[in-house]
Image (cartoon, one colour):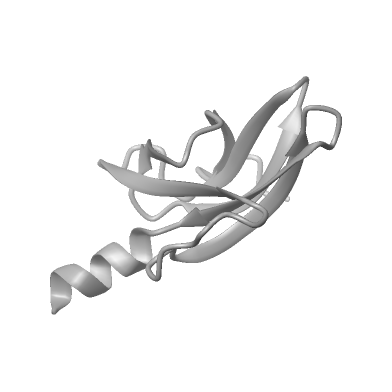
Length: 102
């Protein structure tokens, strides 16, 4: 294992809301969404911490709620409120890139 590697894993707290922007270095790989100490978090592999930042549009959708057509890439599901609330998280970065290229 190369301990001098520049890649690191960062944690980004998520709000329980339909849509939010998470800012991170460009080219980061989104890994997982889980609850830690009662707070939903997004973990990402930061390939270059010195890269310019980009905004990732994160959608959170409850089970049974209407879903827009352009949700993006599924990131994961988490439960909160004693498992009474099940939420599904999506990253729309790729959809935004497709829209910009069109």
